[in-house]
Amino acid sequence: MKIFVVGTGRVAKCVIDKLTAKGHTIVCGSRHPESIAETEQCKPVLFDLHSEKNDITETVKGFDAVYFLAGSRGKDLLQTDAFGAVKLMQACEAVGIKRFILLSSIFALEPEKWAQEKSLQNITNYNIAKFFADNYLVSCIDLDYTIVQPSVLKEEEGNGMIELDPEHDGSNPIPDVAEVLVSVLERKNTFKKVIKMRSGDTPIGSALANI
Ligand SMILES: NC(=O)c1ccc[n+]([C@@H]2O[C@H](COP(=O)([O-])OP(=O)(O)OC[C@H]3O[C@@H](n4cnc5c(N)ncnc54)[C@H](OP(=O)(O)O)[C@@H]3O)[C@@H](O)[C@H]2O)c1
Image: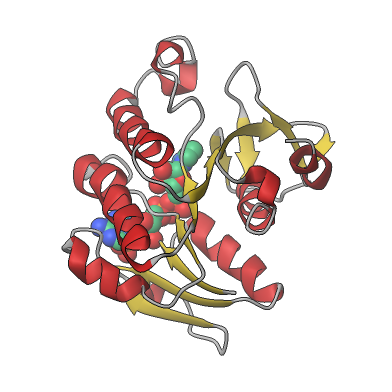
């Protein structure tokens, strides 16, 4: 597939490595595309989520699927994490791209959990931004979406074992989150689903097969 990835950060790098290993062709965009090495299968381009929707629409023309793996680390929640994601969804709709994979965060659609879970207590504004982006994708537009909601990201080796729909937050190695993001791409049973995850004891393949 020809895939457009927004983001060139920790998760995006790992996702791009895994997608290219599967034979897909990637264009990835951020404000610092030089943070990713250009290869035969991966072309980094300058891309800013502050751009007008029409410009984003021109950029995504011709792709089969789009990943939103960007985030502002709390510094630009409205324009990047919330409205940036929404404009990207609208751009996909405008050019007929159905497959849209959104990296979100655990319990972003469940505000009642935000005060209960220790790791979420200090990031309410972030969760609000994700709440609106996730909700837009679920309720306001007709795309074949998958929303992946991981727990705290850890820079450590993955073991490929996860728990879906956990009752509480936890953590997950970035490679395992990337593996889920890549594995859902062509799994139709994950279309129009929100996948909450943390590290666990079920192999990723079996966990996703049972969704
Ligand atoms: N940290 C956690 O524990 C955690 C837990 C659950 C979910 N998440 C979610 O996972 C996401 C990805 O995590 P990560 O560690 O990979 O983040 P990261 O390393 O900070 O990468 C974020 C990416 O977003 C891009 N970006 C920021 N503003 C942009 C803009 N205006 N236009 C285009 N691209 C922009 C950045 O590139 P430029 O700055 O070059 O534009 C960067 O490539 C987070 O943003 C968060 O929503 C995080």
